[in-house]
Length: 236
Image 1 (cartoon, rainbow, N blue to C red):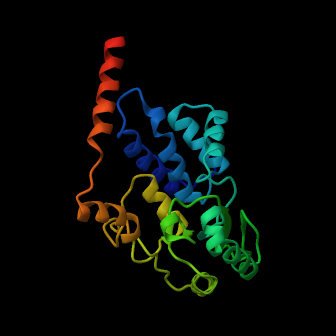
Image 2 (cartoon, rainbow, N blue to C red):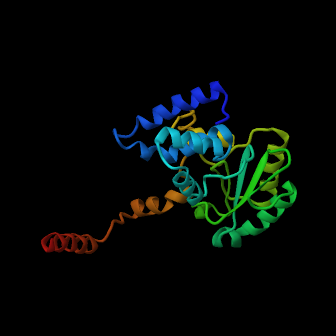
Image 3 (cartoon, helix red, strand yellow):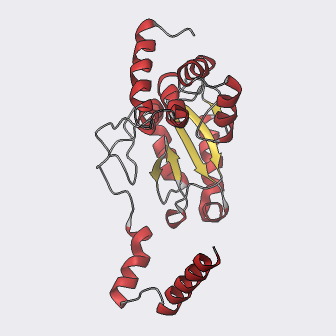
């Protein structure tokens, strides 16, 4: 590994805290947050990071690579300071996601899974940002920018390129960098976890309507479910 002594010491201290979250003998369970920890330092799952995890968790490098290539949040080459993901799945696409992607990609000058020459922005087309009630959606370092238009998305890119703060619709007031958010995903809070709403009104509207009308789950459905559960227990 080519980490400096100071960086290696910080990684070892952080790794010890992550591993301590799990019962004795289950350190392997720390693999996912450890991968995020590596990305918080290197900006991707680097060969040095894989070596560090392998020696720390006593896992084969091949097993670590297999996990890192399975989940799209883990990157296998350097990621920009801001990872901008434009949803172009069905609903976002028909609401303007395809046009947003074309405008943003043209402005940054790179395609999906590519990084701008200055290292500021990595773009990716996202299949779903799990925010269809706010389509079209753009995510920056996993933070939501809801109800986007080509002009609002381009203005956000302008701010990133100019070094200005950008402000998610939900979550922290100011979007953190990719490495900063990766440290949060590794399990180290940054003090911004209570800023902004996590769910907006569009997400909760169904509950509001149900409460206003006194709607609840049909009793017959609950009885059927309970009867099914009882028969299942008897069969055992």
